[in-house]
Image (cartoon, rainbow, N blue to C red; front, side, top):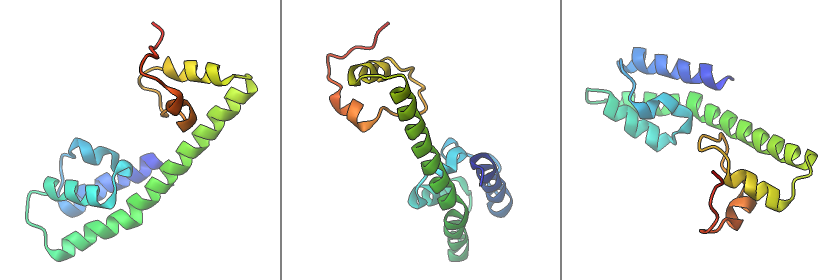
Length: 129
């Protein structure tokens, strides 16, 4: 399942089934949302009162579509972390090299620093200009 297509399918479903013509920002990345976050955001975006059946439909939609997207997204992130670690090892980076690399990483880095690097960060560590 592709994240992009899964999210697009969910967006279409929300528009057709629940009348959400303009997605609020929070619903644009549904794979980032827990079931409770999704249901809360969807209820706010739907301009009418929801019946129990409509709420059940939203919850089923989350379980059937968004929960698997979240699993795929977590798997992708795990592969990205593994690949990053393999590249670091291939270049023979020391712990200090890794810490410097992560401290000076661009703000839009797709991954957060690994836990071992983040734990070593101190307040006086300043990124290089």
